[in-house]
Length: 576
Image (cartoon, rainbow, N blue to C red; front, side, top):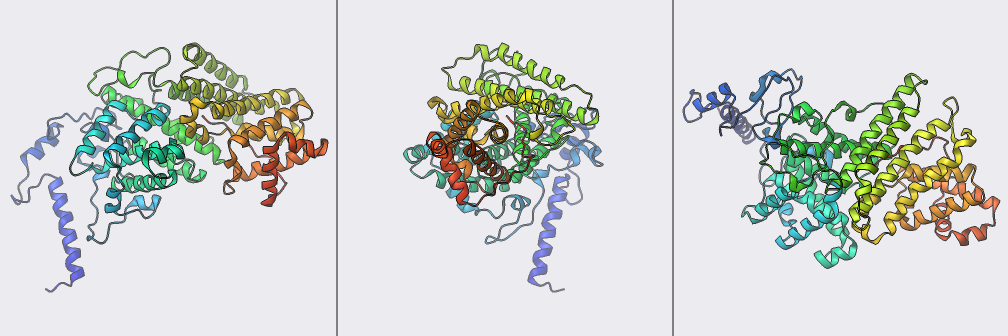
């Protein structure tokens, strides 16, 4: 029977697929019909072909430990009893395309069309630039995330750049993510001096390369730890250029992948080597904090999320030097500041926020539940941080200074959120009904939060960490200050409020530049209304002279034709 060229190609594709399926199930193609003894033995005994044990345990959500960094949870899926027989999702077979055509991947649905493989290879930096970017990552990005174990990652980089054929797909995704993170933290001048190109060019190049590399690594199907680390680093580095709604959805994607890998279950992690388990705890907590913050700035309010379904312990306060892939037990946790200081502060704040959310959800069911429970949780956090971490910090060390500032700011933000509920009766709607007793207290809390942000911008030693400060602006505090200026502030309070607004926009002129974000538009409307209110009570010329930055912001907003009507429910929960 004669086959057309198209049909012949389709048949060949099917044959390759069948051959792959036969081979993966231990059937030798050279010895037709015979089953590989080695393959059968591996499945019968529970051992892998290289002699490593594959422990299933009795938990229905067991973890495949044959390759620790690819551990995944099968949970209660109908096919979970198949165990080892299931292929790794990251190794699923794809259609083959010719040299001029590349297979579309599910990742393309998320990131869109990507550069070609040849272009990706051309985007690799030189060896000298690679290690310069790696050092920048270690200095500026790694202390605030601690997703990677620096010593083992450095070995990985050294091996990758020394290889004649380049890194494998998973490692390449991580490398490009590291380059992107490093560039994100650099100034324009640093990029020109060290890498010889404008920052925007470098950022766009490594952003596109990271997305392509993630697609090559099949990040939507992969259960490889390195791939999820690369995806999370990409999201952390891209928060300023991805819209809030998309970032929240992408953070959820990372979270679901982590769940597939069992990171949300402490029982699952305990089956892994201690080093692997601790790396997963670090990554899981970074993902849930990213999801929480993304939900906040996107205006999403959920009573319960996938974040609350996990029971993974907080990562230990240990520097990378205390961890090793070869250790059999986790060492005792260090008391006082370590390399994990900043992350540990954020993790403790995140755990407290979960407790506060539980109280708020309970009050929706039963309003008689006292808000004092939330206040007690915040008080307990403040005491814990002061006693175990902050009192031992050295303010001359930039990481210590930033950690204490972020910690105190987060505590104030949680108090502001809780006390807004306390001082605004549940049966009323809108800030206009706020009780007299709480107004001044909440206003001062909001001013204090903005002051922590202003200090971070004005402190020279903290400039390498501005990428984090920029991505975590306290919108809740700004909204509250503007609302207070609009409704109540006079005299000294008005002066305090506008002085703070003047400083905020002096540090962050980009806040008025994004007209696509609903929060930015709403804040712009609030500024116009508050300015008009204050101008009505004071000499407008003197007001513009005293607060020139704020006056300039108002003029720019008016030029854009923003409306001076404000919704009464423009609020936002705090993040860390």
